[in-house]
Length: 279
Image (cartoon, rainbow, N blue to C red; front, top):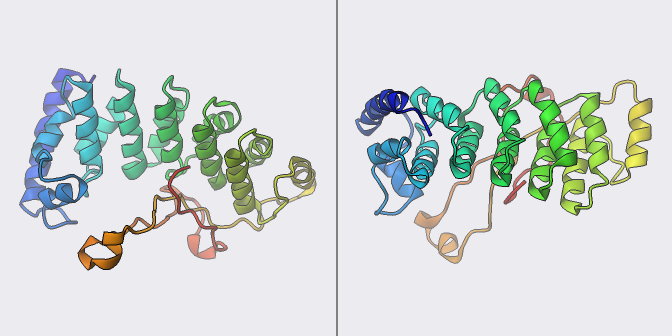
């Protein structure tokens, strides 16, 4: 749980920022209340209440407060970033998972370090959210933890997410880990490992680890034909109401390059589709 003295200071900053948002001082939706109204229903807490919940003694309130704030258009402001960065070591795994997701939405390259550490968390949910967050943040310091996760994590979901995240990194040690992941007993892990290998190399040897290994050993420049990496986003088919009512239609997030991406997106080849419900 966040230290009470730090919580009071962060709460003051949070309330001040929320006041600006409600007065129209921050960009995005017209008001913070509108943004929250789209996320929850009319019984939802106000933005100020949600900010207060981030420091609540009850873990479920902390989790919900962090989730609401991080899903708002002002959720990446510094007062909230300080909360996510500190609370990722909260005693409650649901709070830690919410902070990992928040850092994925709003984090900087240096936030890859606590996320990489969270890949060894005792909670599968925390590890999964951390691996997904690392799909959105480029930092080579995260590679050892991702390489370990894609091969050794006990969770299929974590291994799939790690395999996807590794598609950013044009390093031979990453190729080796992904080739090992091709032999994973889960077809999902093998599929995501293949996809990352295709993005990194521009080659396609299917799920054959021997062919990939032989090629990687002989290739002088294995990343010469690398393609653009974009992180996956959630999408689903429209519901009946969304199809026939203009006001019910949703705008889904578009795939994008990770923060800290060191390559020129305009110079890259086309990326593969990254939309999907998970991974």
